[in-house]
Image (cartoon, rainbow, N blue to C red):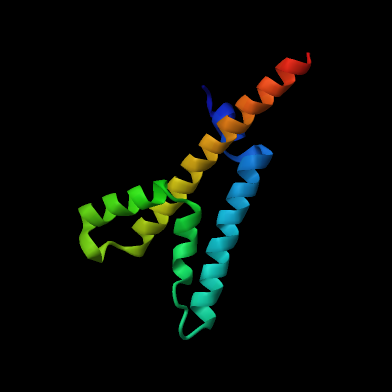
Length: 106
């Protein structure tokens, strides 16, 4: 599997693009609420919910290594890796199902 195949499965198919757009929108919404609201509540958990279960595993590993004082950039990197990993899995599933559908009609 080369880089172009990984890129196609992770970013450029419709299922992955919609998923990454949803995750990106939740991150932007969280940032806007955190900057404009004096009491943001639990709005910061939505990006982690959209990237669960891999983000929960990443946060567990980060907190085990860095403790409760882990830097925010490390959590953001874990969230980004989790989103890309799940986007890859979603893209591979989409391509497998699409290939089966095309194979039946031919």
